[in-house]
Length: 480
Image (cartoon, rainbow, N blue to C red):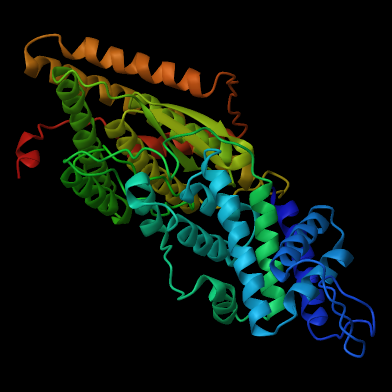
């Protein structure tokens, strides 16, 4: 969603919230039956023909329909009815329980259409505001309790932990009340937030299935540990944790090295730290490939989604693609959803995720330090400069990463004393390509354009400073 569309939506939601606040303080028309069948404050009650629970379900459905049709007047009328149902606190709990059921059903449908918790966290944040993000995290945490732990893929609890999603309320029929108190929102505004979020969830399309949804078979972890965490990266990314990734000891070392590389002010130190991190991951990936081949493993490629947000989203997607290519992975960018899907074997996915996050931060820092730009008559060309900077950075990093991968491979072949490694790596590359084609049968390619020569030259220079060609023996480190 573009920034202008997002601002228009926020303005509309703000106006709707103001109307909701006012609607919550106005009495209904005297003597006129409302959606629940009761009359206004001075007329006799009209007995409903259906139970309160059934009527509540219908009013929520009607409110959602009105919202989808942008019929604000009807939407506000339904909100007012839901905010003041019959039977006082009992009726309020009935409305709360009904909305919990709507969220449970909506989320179950999304899991079976390929979505995962980190995906919903990212897309809701992209389309709405942080209040809705907090609401969807609560809804996810509550819904996933419905499944037996043995039927939930191990990646999902890791995602919830990384996102900070947990059940903090005592009873589901009081969740929305407690949430409203936390957010400082009156009842009718809480109901508006809930139904607006339901609208957003119902409009999401189907995406590629990257693993078993909750309630089905569970993919177990290996004894070596799990993949990297799903914490937000420098551009708001949140990549999913997975099961059979790199040894946690290796990942901890890589994270520590990259954190130092990102924070140091000394170029030489950043180069050495980043090179060491690349070395550890590349060699570990090769060792894992040989081990799997020796054990006759039938391990198949899997996928992760990585957020790609504006500004300069195409350059960022290109950077992810070249990092993936150097690590025998493939990427497919879904621009309209704000993410790229990376397909590969787990150790390689770990390398892609960690290196991309670090390199994007390094590139963004260098780009920002380069400052703004103007043309000869004073007009800003900062955007074209930065787009070209990131595009050039990506191209140059790709060249260096490919050279680095080839060097590690040659060293591993020399150490093994035979050519077993080359057929193993070739088979894994073919498997990744086949999995990508099966998952995305209709892929179209796009080329990135760079119109600012200075930006291109500066980006290439920054990529050279992020050199990754150094290779060292890592056996001593891995044995500690």
